[in-house]
Amino acid sequence: QQPVQSPQAVILREGEDAVINCSSSKALYSVHWYRQKHGEAPVFLMILLKGGEQKGHEKISASFNEKKQQSSLYLTASQLSYSGTYFCGTEGLSNDYKLSFGAGTTVTVRA
Amino acid sequence: DGGITQSPKYLFRKEGQNVTLSCEQNLNHDAMYWYRQDPGQGLRLIYYSQIVNDFQKGDIAEGYSVSREKKESFPLTVTSAQKNPTAFYLCASTPGGIPSTDTQYFGPGTRLTVL
Image (tube, rainbow over all chains, first blue to last red; front, side, top):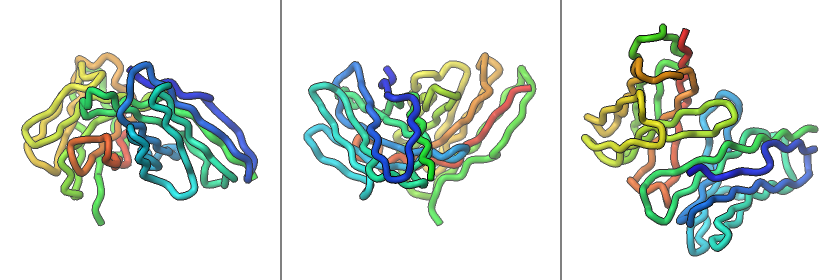
């Protein structure tokens, strides 16, 4: 089952902050975050694992609340390059070796 | 340079025809994946393969078929049984067979349009 992302879209001015949320109806082992520019392939940002381990991007941070089955991606001091669609991908505890992706959050950063 | 190649970038097909989308990787990755992307729906998994000569159905496998005869290649055939095949198709791979701890590397995608 696909996770639910919110908001669907957000518009920011350079330097502003934003939070993107990802919620799942099932217990999770990991949450992945990707960013996709229009017409391009998604690019890896972050993996958050059950137990707190985190791997990823230097300037974008994220949290993973295992009990609530939620993850949040924090865009801090946004730059024009942050524009794109952000997807979360989740893997359940059954370790079925596949990710389920949310519908995406479109972020537009304006000068 | 290592990476994933998908061809062609744009593909047009007439209704009722089968078409095969190519995906090749030279990253020596074990696992490969096919996703379909429609506007507003994110990525949906079609098929995936963790090792050569083995693959599993994803969430929307009906109307699609795959093969994994070589580690570096994972072609996707869109058959005439797929009712609404117009979409953006993305191929991905991971170093191991476990996406939990592995980054998925995506190819540039193929945009299929059925006329």
